[in-house]
Length: 229
Length: 89
Image 1 (cartoon, rainbow over the protein chains, first blue to last red):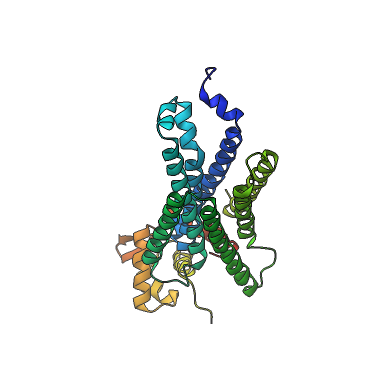
Image 2 (cartoon, rainbow over the protein chains, first blue to last red):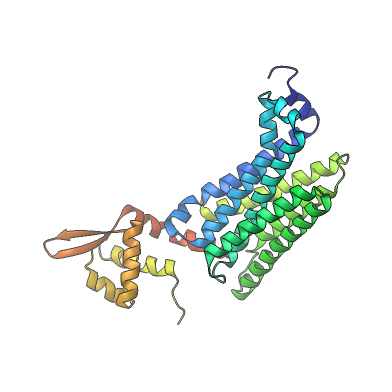
């Protein structure tokens, strides 16, 4: 890389860590998505379809979280960002929130689809809710709204965890089949603490990223083990 | 008696075909599948549409056989069910 490019400043500023973090989450999510492709094609089972979509949307979310800005910087398109940094920041946050909300909703639907009829209506409702949340954040631009939205999503994840736990108890399974949802709940809680942590506590933030990566890798391992990939 | 799920019924139908040296007439297949003719027709059409089974004509009339995709489904069936169970899908 040529010296003096803004990417160097970005890396020095800690965005490099966030870039690596996002990259690993994207890779893990895409690996889960592609590892379950054959099963989805063979079975056409709705639960598997929405489970996969959930991780695809996680990948999209993390792609838009940092990659767009990094892309503009690395291709020396800094002028666009300088022209309206608030605009690009808002757009990337809007898309990130929309995709991550949809990812959680798809995960919820993958465990609830048998109990909920009208799948088309449910998906439309999910999209509308995700868009409302994303618009609410953009127009308010407040950390309180962002925190509130994340707390709502955490409740959704905890609900999924509860359903999975209840079902596994009903079937009196051994082990912890709902562990993936437990890991995702912890991941989401870490996401929320990341919002609350002041930027200067970079060591704590780094720790949050490392734990999040570890959680996603465990989820990936469990999925790969089950699919036999 | 526990009601069979969709995937299990599909697996059962495919297994019947496989156990009959991969060629069976529609009537014995219907009988062995333990389904009403209406439900059987529904599953039969779906298996054809998904490319799991194929119809072949010979001197004795129409016969049904598994395709490669059908064999693949049988091979992966346990993994699919175990995945669905594991993640409560």
